[in-house]
Amino acid sequence: MTSHFRKNVNTLADTIAANQDQPIENVHRIMVEIRLAFEKLKVGTGTDNDFDKVAAAVNVGMIRAEQIDPAAEETMLRGVQALASCDAIKAKHKRYGFTGPDLISMADALDLYEQILQLSTPRKMMDAVAEMAKRIRKGHVMKAAA
Image (cartoon, rainbow, N blue to C red; front, side, top):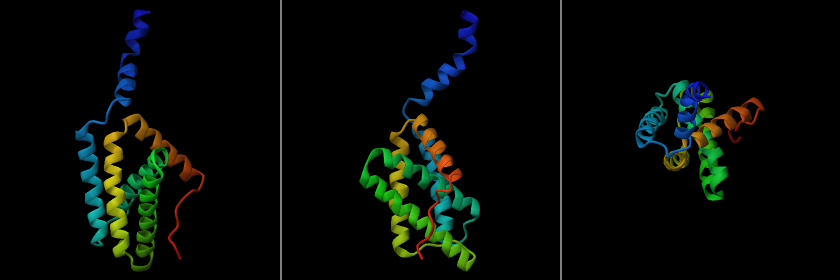
């Protein structure tokens, strides 16, 4: 029995860590990367990789917001819609960009995502990532407004 316990010590430690508060260093590291990608998108120098980083954050934030509060969900939905419009701008002009209102929606969505990230356990965030992947596989993607 003792050897079985030793074999699973890392699993137990990982489970405990996944259900504790998000370390602030992780939040800062993640948000710096996402905000830098957003800045590049704003000025038209962003790449598809930058878009994907920001989109992943906003989509995961949307899933967590659905579980938290309707007002949070609405903020994240506006961010998702802003990203869909940003993608449409890329299709039309060959580089990413935002309208003025979409910039505000994105700033609000990223600020909320940072709060959600800070207040969510790593397990809740990973569950949201898994749900995002499931929705993508089912074809649930936001399209730009016509």
